[in-house]
Amino acid sequence: MELILQQLINGISLGSVYALIALGYTMVYGIIKLINFAHGEIFMLGALAGFFAITVLGLPFFLALVLAMAVCATLGVVMERIAYKPLRNAHRIAALMTAVGLSLFYQSFTIYTVGATPKAFPRIPVQTWEIFGVAISNRQLIILVTAISLMVLLQFIVHKTKMGKAMRAVSFDRDAARSMGISVDKTISFTFAIGSSLAAAAGVLFGMYYGTVHPMMGLLPGLKAFVAAVLGGIGIIPGAMLGGMILGLAEAGVSALGFSTFRDAVAFAILIIILIVRPSGLLGKNVREKV
Amino acid sequence: MKKLLVITGFVVFGVIIQFLIWNGIINNYYAQVFTLMSIFIILATSLNLINGITGQFSLGHAGFAAVGGYFSAIVTTRLDLGLSDFTTFLLALLVGGLVAAFAGFLIGLPTLRLRGDYLAIATLGFGEIIRVLFLNWKYVGAASGMWGIPGYTNFLWAYLVAVVTVLFIVNFMHTSHGRACLSIREDEIAAETMGINTTKYKVIAFTFGAFFAGVAGGIFAHLIRLLHPQSFTFMFSVEILLMVVLGGLGSITGSIAAAILLTTLTEALRQFSELRMVIYALMLIGIMIFRPQGLLGTKELSADSMVKWWAWIKKLLGRTKRVGEQVDNTKDS
Image (cartoon, rainbow over the protein chains, first blue to last red):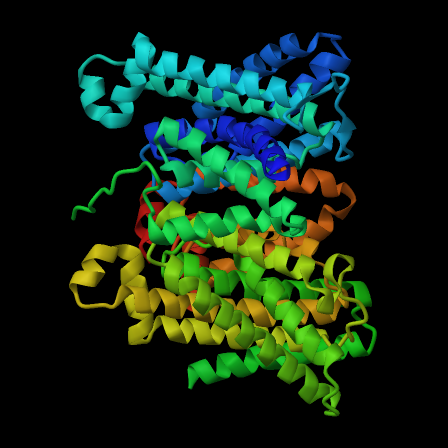
């Protein structure tokens, strides 16, 4: 029982990181129907930005988190303007290929400039509390609290602000939104900014939790977060949170059962099953294809 | 008749190159580069069969190459068949290809109901699963890799397999099955309305593509003589994809040219291997933004078109005044 509870906590803290990344995937997909492959690399760049903010600038953890989010938000907007905007009306495969290319570019460029060796992320000294025989560390608590408050903030932005309304309108029907006087370009940029900053926050939290950052760290969490987004129903914000949590729990469960080397395969197995059984995701609605 | 001549010409060319390698006129380094080129030609053209001709976006080609590589290496190292080197290797390549084709069939059957970007992700996922499975399979060395694979591959092997692959795919394109695949690329719904069993042809293309990727993996394994799951990552798939995209989705000669070009580029940039991936990535983005159909589009390079181009260049040199019109005229040819 205690073991199960313990894995539950581990799974939820990992899952909330996946959920944060998945949110960016889902929002971008919802608004321009593009799988932003480079999103995992934004996560990695966020972690690196946090690393440099703490080590070089000497900022405290939470300020570093905010700075990393700001840096990545800018990066996300610039990326959209340069690489994705010219392809907005092109074939979807072309846009997907560009995203793969961008992801490759961020990886190789960071390896070229920063170096491929993992760097030790300065960590907060660990403190563990025992609650009902279950150990929970302050690091896990920080991840949970930060992730949940960011998600609440996101829900507020999407549902209560004017920009959020514009985002929902553009993702519902871009042309209709444009004719209602909504600036589509601005809204898309805003979506990229929010999604990228969430990924950056996830990156810094991930770095803090695992203690290392390196240029290839974005690949697997990025792909898994995408799986989380598909699992919950891509384009649906609560779906991404749910999917992230399920994925985190599944991975923790597999590790607990002693198959930790198969951990990376679990996410993809889930993906393939969900794509075959219910392609629109857990919370998604089935959309009939029209000719 | 003309076709037969061309094929014989290509085979004779390969034999001559191999003789030059045996005589030491072409040194071992170049021999290896030429062999790699042939392997990448197989990989790129077989991926083109899936991505370019049938229009199904697959990101798992490295996975099929891994399956082929591992299973052919099992035949040559783990089984004691007592056959001559030649037959063992031929058998190994066939086994590797068939197992990869079977994997392609298994993967294709459920996932090919998906389209576009979902399919891409599903194939990527399968590629990763295959890699994780090999990473955990003790029989083939798990994480320490598979050692002691005999170096059966020489240039002629890789080259002849490449010739066979290209021949097969070009001929396949001109059969009714190939036409069906092309029609799926152009408009899936229209193809279905015309009575084409789209799932069947997608699976056929996927299985054949996987077969050749598996054979290429087998040749690759017996060239570098060491297999490790880490050499068949997502990046490897992207590298093959870049060749297909660079040459043009649907252009076989384009894939061949791009495979030769990129292998040469890789060797030329060997000293700057970190910069190489930056350049590849920028190339990929640049091509997609400025020329999404690839350098050749769906056009093919052939002797006839060469003659036409030569005539065009001569004309251009003679009358430089009306360049604009000339360009427009020759675009269609």
